[in-house]
Amino acid sequence: MSKLTPCLWFDGNAEEAAEFYVSVMPDSRIDRIMRAPSDYPAGKAESAMGVEFTVAGAQFMALNGGPAFTFTPAVSFFIACEDQAEIDRIWDALSDGGTPMQCGWITDRYGVTWQIVPRKMAEMMHDPDRDRSRRVFEAMMKMVKLDLPALERAYRGEA
Image (tube, rainbow, N blue to C red):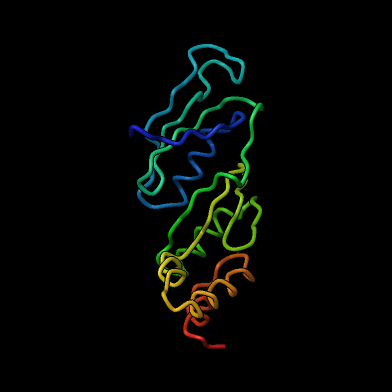
Protein backbone atom coordinates (compact mmCIF):
# COMPACT_ATOMS: atom_id res chain seq x y z
CA MET A 1 0.00 0.00 0.00
CA SER A 2 1.28 3.47 -0.82
CA LYS A 3 2.02 6.03 1.87
CA LEU A 4 -1.13 8.00 0.95
CA THR A 5 -4.22 5.93 0.11
CA PRO A 6 -7.81 7.23 -0.03
CA CYS A 7 -10.11 5.25 2.28
CA LEU A 8 -13.76 5.01 1.22
CA TRP A 9 -16.34 4.30 3.95
CA PHE A 10 -19.14 1.89 3.00
CA ASP A 11 -22.08 0.40 4.84
CA GLY A 12 -21.55 -3.33 4.33
CA ASN A 13 -20.86 -3.34 0.59
CA ALA A 14 -17.15 -2.41 0.40
CA GLU A 15 -16.16 -5.68 -1.29
CA GLU A 16 -18.97 -5.41 -3.84
CA ALA A 17 -18.06 -1.79 -4.61
CA ALA A 18 -14.35 -2.59 -4.99
CA GLU A 19 -15.15 -5.48 -7.34
CA PHE A 20 -17.33 -3.14 -9.39
CA TYR A 21 -14.66 -0.43 -9.64
CA VAL A 22 -11.94 -2.85 -10.74
CA SER A 23 -14.27 -4.21 -13.44
CA VAL A 24 -14.71 -0.73 -14.95
CA MET A 25 -11.10 0.30 -15.58
CA PRO A 26 -7.94 -1.29 -16.92
CA ASP A 27 -4.92 -1.63 -14.62
CA SER A 28 -7.27 -2.45 -11.74
CA ARG A 29 -7.40 -5.32 -9.26
CA ILE A 30 -8.39 -6.43 -5.78
CA ASP A 31 -5.13 -6.49 -3.83
CA ARG A 32 -6.21 -7.84 -0.45
CA ILE A 33 -9.38 -8.44 1.54
CA MET A 34 -9.25 -8.20 5.32
CA ARG A 35 -11.88 -10.46 6.86
CA ALA A 36 -13.22 -9.64 10.34
CA PRO A 37 -11.91 -12.14 12.89
CA SER A 38 -15.16 -11.81 14.86
CA ASP A 39 -18.39 -9.84 14.83
CA TYR A 40 -17.93 -6.07 15.03
CA PRO A 41 -20.36 -3.13 15.12
CA ALA A 42 -20.52 -2.81 11.31
CA GLY A 43 -20.39 -6.49 10.35
CA LYS A 44 -20.17 -10.18 11.09
CA ALA A 45 -17.19 -12.47 11.53
CA GLU A 46 -15.52 -13.35 8.20
CA SER A 47 -17.23 -10.49 6.36
CA ALA A 48 -15.01 -8.09 4.43
CA MET A 49 -13.99 -5.47 6.96
CA GLY A 50 -11.61 -3.76 4.54
CA VAL A 51 -10.59 -4.15 0.91
CA GLU A 52 -7.34 -2.88 -0.57
CA PHE A 53 -7.75 -2.38 -4.31
CA THR A 54 -6.19 -0.62 -7.26
CA VAL A 55 -8.18 1.33 -9.86
CA ALA A 56 -6.37 2.60 -12.96
CA GLY A 57 -3.09 2.22 -11.10
CA ALA A 58 -4.23 4.20 -8.02
CA GLN A 59 -4.51 2.46 -4.66
CA PHE A 60 -7.63 2.65 -2.52
CA MET A 61 -8.96 1.20 0.70
CA ALA A 62 -12.65 0.36 1.12
CA LEU A 63 -13.86 0.08 4.71
CA ASN A 64 -17.15 -1.37 5.92
CA GLY A 65 -17.67 1.19 8.66
CA GLY A 66 -21.46 1.10 8.94
CA PRO A 67 -24.16 3.69 8.27
CA ALA A 68 -22.66 6.59 10.25
CA PHE A 69 -21.16 8.40 7.23
CA THR A 70 -22.07 8.77 3.56
CA PHE A 71 -20.37 10.21 0.50
CA THR A 72 -20.97 13.67 -0.96
CA PRO A 73 -19.83 15.19 -4.26
CA ALA A 74 -17.49 17.41 -2.22
CA VAL A 75 -14.94 14.64 -2.83
CA SER A 76 -14.84 13.13 -6.31
CA PHE A 77 -12.48 11.11 -8.47
CA PHE A 78 -11.33 12.60 -11.77
CA ILE A 79 -10.88 10.17 -14.67
CA ALA A 80 -8.95 11.58 -17.63
CA CYS A 81 -10.23 9.70 -20.71
CA GLU A 82 -8.32 9.39 -23.97
CA ASP A 83 -11.30 9.48 -26.35
CA GLN A 84 -15.08 9.45 -26.62
CA ALA A 85 -15.18 5.65 -26.63
CA GLU A 86 -13.50 5.57 -23.21
CA ILE A 87 -15.80 8.31 -21.91
CA ASP A 88 -18.83 6.35 -23.11
CA ARG A 89 -17.64 3.01 -21.68
CA ILE A 90 -16.84 4.36 -18.22
CA TRP A 91 -19.92 6.62 -18.15
CA ASP A 92 -22.20 3.73 -19.08
CA ALA A 93 -20.72 1.49 -16.37
CA LEU A 94 -20.91 4.10 -13.62
CA SER A 95 -24.37 5.31 -14.63
CA ASP A 96 -25.87 1.82 -14.11
CA GLY A 97 -27.76 2.54 -10.90
CA GLY A 98 -26.05 5.93 -10.61
CA THR A 99 -27.09 9.54 -11.02
CA PRO A 100 -25.63 11.62 -13.87
CA MET A 101 -24.90 15.26 -13.13
CA GLN A 102 -23.88 18.26 -15.21
CA CYS A 103 -20.42 18.71 -16.76
CA GLY A 104 -19.33 15.08 -16.81
CA TRP A 105 -19.98 14.34 -13.13
CA ILE A 106 -21.76 11.18 -12.05
CA THR A 107 -22.57 9.66 -8.67
CA ASP A 108 -22.42 5.87 -8.90
CA ARG A 109 -24.73 3.33 -7.26
CA TYR A 110 -22.56 3.36 -4.11
CA GLY A 111 -22.72 7.13 -3.70
CA VAL A 112 -19.17 7.85 -4.91
CA THR A 113 -18.87 10.79 -7.32
CA TRP A 114 -16.68 10.70 -10.42
CA GLN A 115 -15.71 13.25 -13.06
CA ILE A 116 -15.47 11.61 -16.49
CA VAL A 117 -13.48 14.10 -18.54
CA PRO A 118 -11.52 13.94 -21.80
CA ARG A 119 -7.78 14.33 -21.17
CA LYS A 120 -7.76 16.96 -23.94
CA MET A 121 -10.12 19.16 -21.89
CA ALA A 122 -7.25 20.62 -19.84
CA GLU A 123 -5.39 21.63 -22.99
CA MET A 124 -8.49 23.30 -24.44
CA MET A 125 -9.42 25.07 -21.19
CA HIS A 126 -5.88 26.38 -20.66
CA ASP A 127 -5.49 27.72 -24.20
CA PRO A 128 -4.07 31.27 -24.10
CA ASP A 129 -6.79 32.21 -26.60
CA ARG A 130 -9.55 33.06 -24.10
CA ASP A 131 -12.24 32.88 -26.81
CA ARG A 132 -11.40 29.23 -27.44
CA SER A 133 -11.47 28.30 -23.77
CA ARG A 134 -14.70 30.28 -23.26
CA ARG A 135 -16.42 28.43 -26.11
CA VAL A 136 -15.34 25.06 -24.68
CA PHE A 137 -16.48 26.06 -21.20
CA GLU A 138 -19.87 27.25 -22.45
CA ALA A 139 -20.36 24.03 -24.45
CA MET A 140 -19.40 21.91 -21.42
CA MET A 141 -21.85 23.76 -19.18
CA LYS A 142 -24.72 22.56 -21.41
CA MET A 143 -23.67 18.90 -21.21
CA VAL A 144 -24.28 16.07 -18.78
CA LYS A 145 -22.02 13.38 -20.26
CA LEU A 146 -19.18 15.19 -22.00
CA ASP A 147 -19.11 14.95 -25.79
CA LEU A 148 -15.49 15.30 -26.92
CA PRO A 149 -16.24 15.88 -30.63
CA ALA A 150 -18.70 18.67 -29.70
CA LEU A 151 -16.15 20.21 -27.33
CA GLU A 152 -13.51 20.09 -30.09
CA ARG A 153 -15.91 21.79 -32.51
CA ALA A 154 -16.55 24.52 -29.95
CA TYR A 155 -12.79 24.90 -29.49
CA ARG A 156 -12.36 25.41 -33.23
CA GLY A 157 -15.28 27.87 -33.34
CA GLU A 158 -17.46 25.61 -35.48
CA ALA A 159 -21.23 25.60 -35.00
